[in-house]
Structure formats: C-alpha cells, structure tokens
Amino acid sequence: MNKSRPNSDPTILGTRPIGRLLMQYSVPAVIASVVTSLYNIIDSIFIGRGVGAMAIAGLAITFPLMNLVIAFCMLIAVGGATITSIFMGQKNIARASEVINNVLTLCLIHSLIFGGTTLIFLDPILLFFGATAETLPYAREFMQVILAGTPIAYVFIGLNNLMRATGYPAKAMVSALLSVGVNIALCPLFIFVFGWGIRGAALATICGQLAAFTWVLCHFMSKNSYIHFRRDKSWLSFTIVKRIYAIGMSPFLMNVCACVVVVFLNRALLDCAGSNGNLAVGAYGIVNRTTMFFVMIVFGVTQGMQPILGFNYGAGNWGRVKQTLRKGILIGVSITTVGWAVTELFPDTISEFFTIDRELVDIARNGFRVYFICFPVVGCQIVITNFFQSIGKPKLSIFLSLTRQLIFLIPFLLILPAFFGIDGVWAGMAASDFLAFVVALITLIIMMRRQNRKFMSLPSLPTTQY
Image (cartoon, rainbow, N blue to C red; front, side, top):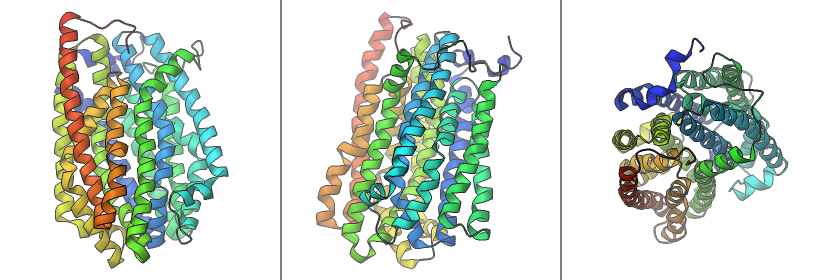
C-alpha cells in the first residue's frame, strides 16, 4: 500500500457523512470553477479594454466553436470519470486503472482529429456561426491558437476530471488554479506589452493549460497515486470506449446543443438589431460570460457530487445517493438565485467591467433584466441532469440536456423575435430555462419512485450494471 492512500482513499465515499464529503469534494471543484469563470471574465475584460468592442463581438462569435471544442473533450472526461467512480464503488481497481489509460488515448485522438479538421475549414465555420467582415479577423486569430493547442487542453481536462473522481479533489483544484493563474499573469503582458491583441489572449490560455497539463500528467504517471497509468492494461479497449461514449454522450450533446443554440442566437441578434447587430452579439457575450460564472459554480458542485453519487450507486447505497442529491439541489438553487439578484441589481456595473461603450452597456442591461428572470430554477435543472449522468443513466441525462438547449429554445428563437424583436431573444432563453426545469423535476420524481422500489427489492447493484 502506498503512503498517499490513507489521505486519498476513495472508499470514504461510502462511509463519511454526506455533508463532509460534499465539502471535501465540491469546495475544491467550486473554487476551480470560480477561478476558471473569473479567468473567462478577466480574459474578456482584457480583450474588450485592450483590443476593442469589435473584439468582444468577435470573441462571442467563437462561443459555438468553443462549445464544440469542449464537447469532444467532455465526451471522454465525464464518461471516464463516471465509470471510474462506479468501478471503485465495486472495488474493481484494476478496471478503474484501465479506464485512465483509455481516457488519455481518446483525448489525444479526439484532439488531433477535431483540432486539425477545424483549422482547415476555420473561416467558413466562423462565417456560418455569424461572423461578419468586422468580427471575422478577431475570431480567426483567437481560434487558430486555441485549436492548435487542443491536444494540451484535452489531456488536461480529461485527466483532471479523473483526478477528482479517483480521490484527489484538492489536487484537481490546484491544476485548475495553475492553469488560470498562468493565464491571468500572461494575458495582460501579451496584449498590452507585446501588442499581440486577441491572439495574445489565446496564447496565454494555451500556456496556462500547458502548466496544468504537466501537473496532471505527472500525477497519473506516479505510482504513489491511488490510481495511475499501468502499462499492463489496455490503452484502447472497445468495451471501455463504448461505455465512456455512452455516459459521456450527455455532456457531449449538451455542448453540441449549446453550439447550435449560439448560432441561432447570434443570427437572431444580428437580424433583430439591424445596424447594431455586432453590438448585440457583443452584449450576448457579456451576458453569457456572466451567466457562465454562476453556472460554472453549480457545475463545480455537481463535479464534487459525481464521485459520491457514482461510488454509492455502484455500492448499492441508495439512501446516500438520495441524500447527496437533495443537498446538491439546495446548493444549486441557492447559487443561481444569487446570480439572479446580482444581475438584477447591478447590470450596468457588470457590463462596464467589459466595455466603456455606452450603447453596448445599454443593450446588455436589457439582456440581463429579461434573461435572468427564471435563472433561480436553472440550478435545480443542472443538478438533476448531472445526477442521472453520475449514476450511469445517460439517456435521461441526454434528454434533459436537449430540453433546455434545443427542444424549447430554438422554437422560441424562431418565433418570439418576430413579435418582440431583441427582447424576444432574451425572453426565449428565459422561457426555455423554466420549461426545462419543469420537465427535469417531473422526470426526477418519476425515476425516484422507480428506483426506490428497485432498491427495496434489491439491496445492492449487480457488478455488471453501469
């Protein structure tokens, strides 16, 4: 037994009080998410202040492509982390080690295929996503660097999720802090001192990810880690890859849907705002960055919940699963309610961090006021969606992901702007959030009743169930 195991033994997931576990696992993940969100915001501030309003709009145009970049990574990262937690709950450490080998291989394959293909067709893709003659140069310069660095980003994100799932939440937090810290230190240097513009911001991002990449790779190469790379295990197993894809399909589709939705949003804003179309897209960029700050905090909570849920579900501890879910929903709703209050009270203050353009501030203010009306319930919807993903029920998680970002929002974007203009765009986002929450709540109630009956008749899950 290695020396680090007593302090990082994942078997405590089945015995330690849920409140303490959520603090131990969620707090580091939340800190990492907050810092990552702040990086995104600070990065946008540097770009807006150092390059200009059109650069903010150009950055907003890259959002759908960035969602696609993340989608192909999270397909592996979340699927691998969930399966690893379930294997550890079943005390199958050898198979958990094999998952880590496969995650590294898949991350490299995905990054090379996706990053290379997208670089070749970058301009047509950005134009399809809503770039104009004014915003295309900024979007192109930013994404060329980001896409070139996808192998680094994919390995970092993929292994960081596994680090948390295998009993090292504090080290996973450190890797995120390392990435963000290097980025924030280099971004103003590259933009303001070296004059590299928006390309400098992207390069600072890759440098930060390279530092974190080195950190997580060293962790899993060390035999002192509870779970680490093992040469004697498969590096590309069809069975494991299939399971990773099955569970990771939910966050993958969620990000793909986000990509599709942002395309519709950009085009709707360009059509509704007329000559101010680029500024409207920039305003969405500000609103989106702010939204993601609070959403990422909730995601931090769900990341902390994931190993707890996966381990206890794999071990058949249904009571602990339900307790974790209840606490997670309460925390998630509290976070998004705070988000609603902040944006309702200080919309101009938030926008002025990003830009001094008064017209852009005015458009963003209206977006904050309308879109955030239903934001408090978003926390509940996110936690429920990730709950099904964490216990190995990808179909339900995929369905709930689709309701929020695709099934409800796109019809609203096609209908409401015709009657209410740009307000219809913001209102469509709010309405889809509320309806997705209702569907998630109903789905949860139905499934919990079924699971209660199942666990009353079956004290533990078969080891073959995922």
